[in-house]
Length: 120
Length: 106
Image (tube, rainbow over all chains, first blue to last red; front, side, top):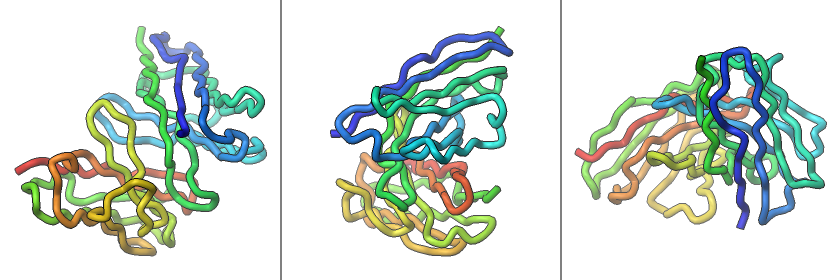
């Protein structure tokens, strides 16, 4: 069965940087588009970024554009999120999520999440 | 940006009752809509994709309907494990989530 495991979260000061990783297993990672979704404490879900299977198409939410960079290494079955110029409002649990059936709407597998806390 | 508005914010029902959750889009999203269930401390779980298709392993008591701007998630007879927060999500234009509906035990 497909599995996604995030890592790299932690406490960082405002203006700092952090790199999140998501290790994929149990499926052909190179065939699927991937996403990052975050959830601030006690709040709802917010989509952050999307990357296609070949990295040819990338999208960002306006709230992170210019500060965050999504990437992937299909040889290592890994997804990444480089986060720069972090702000207090970036504090959240960050999930990686797999796009489901090609062309369909829905993320069918999610990781357990990694907590990022931005605070001085 | 397409805004998804879910109603009600909180729904209080008893086990065995029927639950009807609404999601309205600020512009048409065709059928590019999904529903998720999230329990405390857990990642979201995909229930419905493309507005009306149940995801793998989802019980038949969950159903989705609608197209364009108005969508509904129906749980035909609530089980104790169904009490959770439910989110809708569109991908017609980038990706956005609704603010969620909390389904609580009455």
